[in-house]
Structure formats: structure tokens, C-alpha cells
Length: 631
Image (cartoon, rainbow, N blue to C red; front, side, top):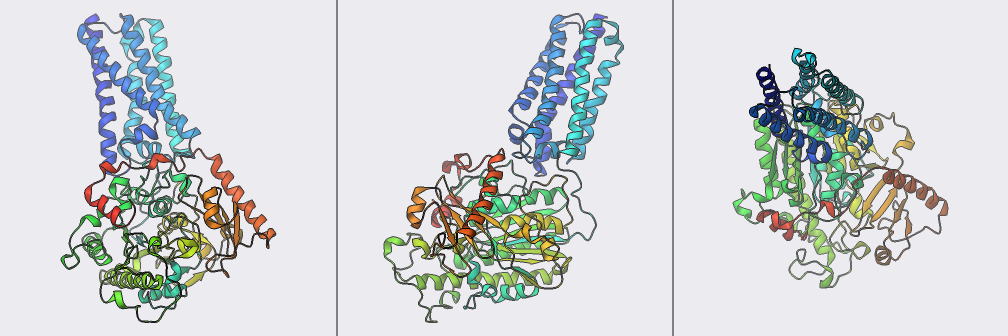
């Protein structure tokens, strides 16, 4: 009997060890290949406790195998009894901690692991059911265990009961709390989705937003034919922070990014490309700003992701291999190969970013029109990477900036034409926007962005083409934000989540005229270069800026609060907080409510946690970050 029991013990322990080892190494690898889950999410979403439990289970299973080999009988040895009890406890701890973390930290953790590990992947879903019911049943109904010893049998059954209960709770949790599995392609007619973005593009330097120079003929026409949001803002006027908010549909503070440049995009975020990928879409990104490097995790959710500053496919312009024409070339090549599949594509062009060096003939397009709006500045005001041949007249810099826009516009025209040639225009949703604008000399901030939450840096273009839903062009004046893009695109693609993590709003009800006005009355913005950074609230006419840092107050010449009527005071230089106390009070109330909501969340918030180690960044990425003044 002892031999039989030892063999049974050894077999069970070997199977448990193999299963746990497979779970620990193979499942994260398989999911990682599908971009659903990254390995270190086992440290974050599941929690250190549960991962530690899994590791200890492996150790104890190994110990069980050794005991079996040594000849210890399963029910006869006190050592093996304690071992099995410990195993049952650890299994409950492993599964139960996932439930507890999901239940009590749902606001901080959007639920990647519970959804992807147990509902988002059919293989895992089936096998967790097997582990939760079949394996315990094997123990409980084994005639060996049923015979003796009775005390141990009771203890074992109790531990296995908790194992089954934990499995049931986990399965229920994935339905009630987790993201459901409804985000699949509803039909063969599901639309393609393209996110088309341009770096450092002020809305007020485009014709469709009232600019006098003809910088954007293609975009102007695109806007006339589709839906234009006239009062759109980015969430934070820096590339990393802005796109982190855009891709997650959440405010910057919720993403866990730091306020620095070259910052990490924490993997714990649920990003829009991941959702599209899990819904059956092919996903690809072609980006030209090194802040969006794979190193910083912005490739999360993309099957293909090209860092175009690392390419040198344009010999005539050897030093500027990441310009818009090359971005379009690479996107075209991908579309020719993958256009027959349902896809989500991100195309990002950096050209308007300083230094302003458009190619000929765009470099002379606006240099002779006599524009003279700004007074010359001293050389110390202009950063070295921006400086153009000793020029001190801001109008000359702006002429080159506008030339960059015109060049980018020509490439956008080419890209839109490619979509027509590939017969994709009628079933492809396109969002065009920018990550932020640019300050020229406003508020003594020269040819840069990110320091203040003023319109020159936060007002961005936003055009939506949705031929599968809206055929009539429309101009919308209600304030909207870049965090509204993710829920809007997923809504248009008919992708649903049972518990959406978004803080942005689905704009489709606004387009259809079914929205309650109060739901789209205010937008909130974050900005700054200091730890105690600025927040702002903005409606159709007014903006209240809250600058708690004394250095910011000194730079601006205002107190903690300042009020601007930005629709009339275009450059926001007149603080009218004393003249309009009612408006200031109303906006202070809204800002306080928003800040309170943020404080109630178990959030990571901006900190040094998102900073990167520059020593580990590849040489090309480091070079581009330095050339654009980021480092």
C-alpha cells in the first residue's frame, strides 16, 4: 500500500509542479506574444503576494517530488501532510489575492490580469476551470484519501473547498468587475481605424481654425467634408504625457507617467491599441518622435511598431530620416500588405517640432509675405537646438514653422489619396489631431511647450471622419479633450467593455445632437515643469488656471488662481479674476470637484516612477531626444 501511495503522491506532485511551472513561464509568454499581457504585470496587477505564493508553490511541489522519490508515503508522513495543507493554502492565496486586488484597487488597476488571464484568452479560461474543479475532484474522490487518515481527509477537503470557492469567486469577478469579452469584431463590416497625429501643431495655425496663411489646404478640405471640433484641447502639452492620456482615455494623473520628458508609459495602463488588438484588429504604429519609443512602452498593444528616427531610407535628406514623407512611405507599405484585414493604424509625424527646418520649397513659402507681428528677442531666449543662423526675429521662426505645417499637409494629402487608391476610404474611421501646440514668445516662453496651460500650447486640431456613421459635415463648438478620442473610436467600432476605464466621453452623442449640454461644458488640463504642477478648467469662453507653485506664480505674475477670457483675449495676457468673481467662483467649484475626484482614486500620479534610465536608451533614440532639446 505504501508503495502505491508513494507512487500516487509522486504522480500528483509531479503534475502539480509541471502545471505550476507551465503557468509561471508559458502563460505570460503566450499572452505577451499577443500583446495582451506583459510579464511584469504578474508583479503589478496580480500583486507581489500572489506571485510569491505561486513561486512558493513551485518550491513545495519540488519538495513533494523529492519526498516521493525518497519513499515517504502520502498519508503516513506528517511532513507530507503539512506540505499538502500549505499547498492548499497557497493556492487559495494565489487565486484569492487576484480577487481582492481587483475588488479594492479597481480604480488604480483597470483589470488587465483578471480579464486577459481568465476571460480574454480562451485557452486559459478553459484550463483554469480544469484546475479549479477537475483536479480537486481527483483528490476528494480518490479512494486512497477516502480510506485514511480521516482527520487528514477532512483537512484536505476543507482546503480544497476553499480552492473551488476561490475559483468560483474569480470566475464571477471576471464577469462583474473585469472587462468582458464582448470586444470582438461584430461583423465583417467592422470599420478600420486610423489615428493620424502631428507633433507640435497649433490649431490656430490651420486655415480651418481661422489662420490667414494658407498652411493647410488638404486639412482644410478634409475638415470641410467631415466633423471638426473647434474647441479641442490636449490633456497635457507634452508628447509623452499627452499621448499617454489619449491612448488610455484617462487624465494624465491616472496614467502614472512622470512630468518629465523621455518618460515611461506604465504597462499597467489599458491602452486603446490593446483593446483593438484583443477585438481581432491588426495593429501597427509608425511614429517619428523618440519620446514614443518602444523603450518607453508606447508600443503597448501594437503588433508592428516602427521607430522611424532609427531608419535612413531617404538618402537625399540623410539627417532627417524621420520626416513626414518617410512616415507616409512606411505606412503605405504596411497598408498595401495589410489593408485587406481589419486594422488599427497610428501614424505620427513630427515635422512642426523645433528646430523648424522645412525642405525646399516649403522653407520659403512664407518668408516674403511681410508678416511682422513680433518684436525681436535676444539670443539667450532661444534654445540652441532651435536657433536658426543667428536669426532673432520670431516672425522668421514662425515662417519656417508654418512651412513645416505646409510640408506636413502635403504628406497628409498624399496619405489620404493612398487610402482612396487602396479603396479604404469608405470603411475607415480617421481621427486627426495633435499632441500639443507651441508657444512662440507668449508668456516669455520661447519656441517650446509644456510649461503653461495656455491656448497656444493646449488648443489642438481635432477632425473626425466616420463614413460608416456620419456622412454630413459638421462643426462642433463644445469643449472636448483628447481623452475623449479612445471611447469615441471604440464606440464607432462597436467595441464594448463591461466596465470601461475611461475618464473621457464618447463624443458620438454630441455629434448626433443627443448629448446633455452640461456633460460637455468643461474640460480639464494639466501642465507644468514642476512637481506641484498647474491645473486648469476651461469652458466655451473662460479658463481658470490654478498654479500652486510659487515659481509658476512668479513667472506668470499672478496669484494661485488666474482667470482668462480666452475667446476675446487670444494670447491670455489679461487676468480678469477680480473683474469677474462669479465666473471665477463657478470655475473654482468645478476645478475643486475634479481635483477631489482625483484625490479619491488610488492613483500612481506623476512622480519619479516614470523616469527612464538614459544609460539604457539606444544611441539613435538618445540622439534624437537631444537634437530636439528633450535632453
